[in-house]
Image (cartoon, rainbow, N blue to C red; front, side, top):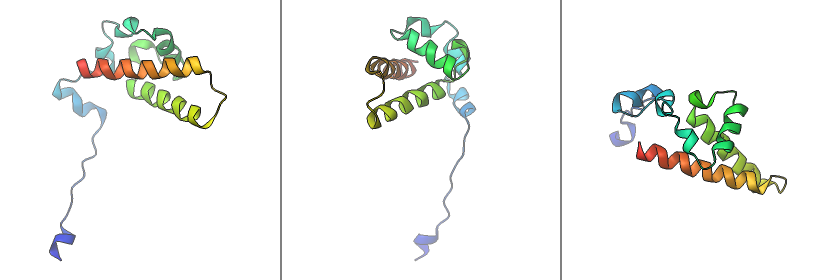
Amino acid sequence: MAEQFKPRVVLFLGAGVTKPLGIPTTPEFFMDKYYEKFKEKNTFLKIAEEIESSPESADLEKVLIKIENIRAVVNESALANKYEVAACVRLGEEIHRLIYQK
């Protein structure tokens, strides 16, 4: 019965916790303008504008959330532009690949 009442610890960490691990901040990530190499550069620039950010300081997490929201809406509605959705999906894959490489 004592097993059921063991205290559990949950850590709440902010984005800055990854910095000491060598993972770059968003401005560092885009220091050499990686976004210019994106095949879906225009989609990235459009999303950065929609989240009211410059490309160099766009929070990648917010960009990826925006992409996921677009995908979710498409699953529920036939009103979305299929080309834009496909471009967003490709952009999300590009960002994930770039993060993994970094």
